[in-house]
Image (tube, rainbow, N blue to C red; front, side, top):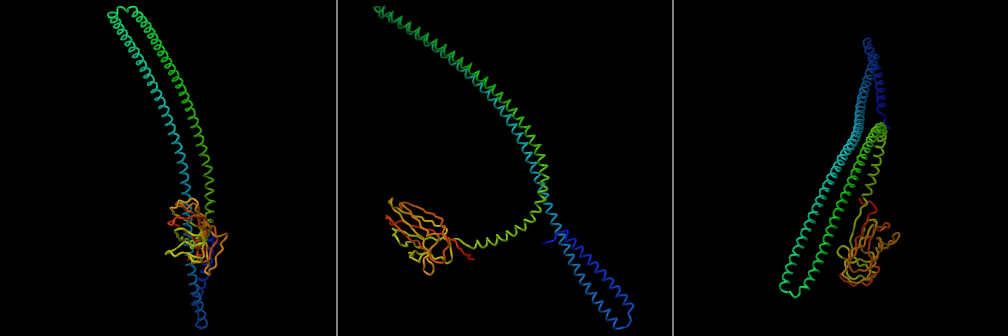
Length: 442
């Protein structure tokens, strides 16, 4: 296990202390050697001893120089570790500052949203008041128009009646001049016409009076409805104003509570940052170990490849035959079909049929067989893949995911196990077989 920064500095300081002690001892030895040299007598034995000590001291000095160089290198490594740790601490502080900025931005955004909502509410109130005023003006205009139309109708009817009377008088004068003998009858007719005209005019006046009364009632009802609507609108405006004030007070309370919560959470966040920093250092080693394991697993998995091969047949198929061809079109047979030179797994089958037959009771069944290199037929688990299609009278497609086990090196062939009521000689069959190698190919 690697030492902590503090332990490494402590150990290096201890090594430096030992080195300093060794150097001090060496200094004493050299001083003694110099003193001995000054007091040396001309005896060969003493000279030999002195020479040996000088050689030994020189070797010790070389060893101490090497140790000093190694210690300096270790100190450089420790300084780099200190710089790296300082950068990590700075990155954590930057992340914490970014989180505070994000929270402050959310509070500011919420305040802006509330201001916008209040402006929208005021605009809606003003628009509703304007709409009510416009509707009242339109109503008054409709009332004035209806009164004008009714007056014109009355005037027109009076004019028509006057014209009718003039025509009647002219007819009376003409009839008097030309038919004196029929005066009695004419007088009777005149009396009848006068009675009818009077009754018609009375009915017309009654209709006019009814129309005026209905019009006035409609006007009174509309005035009442508009007054009620204005009262309801004013009540709604007051209720919305009360609700908006309550919502703003609640929002202010929530903002205050959020500020308190954020202060508490910031303290907890700092504790979590410290804890997370320690956990991340441990997790990095675990991640690296997992990454190495996963890399090895992926390499093994990638080397197991998938591939697809197509076989085709055409015409009227016959039961218990091998009609499908591959490559240049050579028909298949037992133990002669699609060769696969490695152990594999059949993972999927897709069959397309094109036919112009009009038969509604035709059918065809297929089985996928496998033969090993020694010619023996494989017995896959749980069974050989097989499938049946009915009503071969149009374009059809069959797809299946095959849950069978692995196959050894050998040949795959497609056997038509049953063919019933197939008549179209131009019928075409195309099968796609999807395999996956069960051993690494690289």
